[in-house]
Length: 624
Image 1 (cartoon, helix red, strand yellow):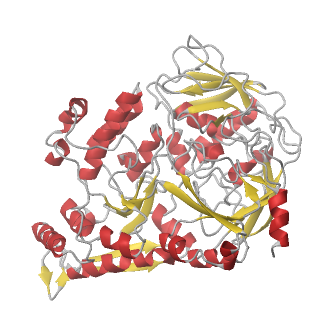
Image 2 (cartoon, one colour):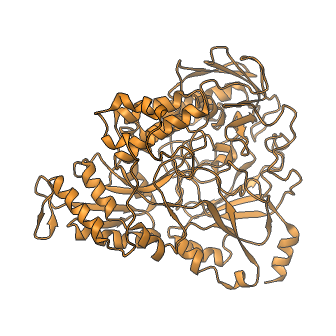
């Protein structure tokens, strides 16, 4: 399952989690307030002020060629299956994947550090002694594509506009940003609220910069097919709404030789193809309708990569490591609905899902079971709470399940038969305890209505994963079904929380901060378009999120997240699904790439850090 993630230019956005610290400081400086070329969290920057390029890229990568793929990561209003707008930073419309390539930000991530940013449009930052004001000094050479200067006035306009009119997820992230003000053309001062979330300055530095002059005559908050004025390494090229969009490399890109960009953005054209059906999309790849594919369906990876181009070597397969926290993927219960408010009911549904059978039969044993939203990280709670965790949890004794103070909840392991009678009997008892009786084979709600459960999907490839699950729910008397709808309807319903159960992946960074709020807090539960699909509104979780955000050391952050993990898992808000720790990819053999992705990169580094190999491309043409 693909999650709501970001490219390298947007890695501090929601979805993959944001980075930061209360004592965020310029790492090259010995005292707070000294000007620095970057910002780091919990330690010093790896790269000095005069660094030439990031270590994980090829600084001599040639420019040229075409890179084409289907979307595998998305952000804000983007969709995997379609697009109808070039405004990708608001709630309205379906934003085109790739628009993040057309804008610059104040700073850019280093993907071989867990939490560091270096100057892009801003050459440096100066942090006030109280850490409430960040003054960014702009590069005088920064330009928009029309040749106009990119100044502090554009930055202030962009940040204030996003805070007021941006996508709800952006608005949530910017709530601790008080204002952004241009002191002159070269200096923008960003003021933050006292006790702000530690990662907000880093998130601010990662946001796109828009042209104030361009939007002087255009409404920012409208979905539009007008191509906005940007300053980034690419510009929108050819496109056909709902089918494909191309981004052409800006040959005279003003920042091409900056250290944060050297060796990146090498393709002359980056193209995204859109398909409504994953199986059809696979056929498009075998027919060379696009050139690169990350495979998310174990069945296809195991059974269908035997087409002629694979056999004769024209298409290469690789499995690249993924060392990032995998986050948590699962079916999320909409607890705003009365029938799903009782955790005993939710646990009964959890017991009806046979992961062991599904993994073996549907997914060819390729996955491990997810247990935590912090999966594949040291923030997963295990065993009994440590004394440090108990110190955070004790104030909530009596307000949270007693289980929180013992072993954390893990989903049950079945016998792999597809219909584990022991687990189904336990589920039956949980439903009886919740006063949901059986009548004529149907489970009844307290109001006498039949208990129905609808799984909302936007692509058919997930239907096989539901078949036995729904059959087992039927054994419990629950009338479960799948509702498959198109991507536009799906996003509208999920944003309005109009569903019983829906799939989502919680993506966590190595240093989660304010990005915890849209997933877990009461405020997010009431915010249309947030990632709190389950409607989690728990005072203990709210308080633990605040503790995690306020952590001053990585050790404190880890303790707070483990405590949060215990309370969330005790709430039975989801049916945990599965994860894997690698990236299965296939591509037509005309590309080259670094030996392995940077440790903290989202995805494989493609297309940003890959490049076109003309010699391989020539051989590929000869092999036709």
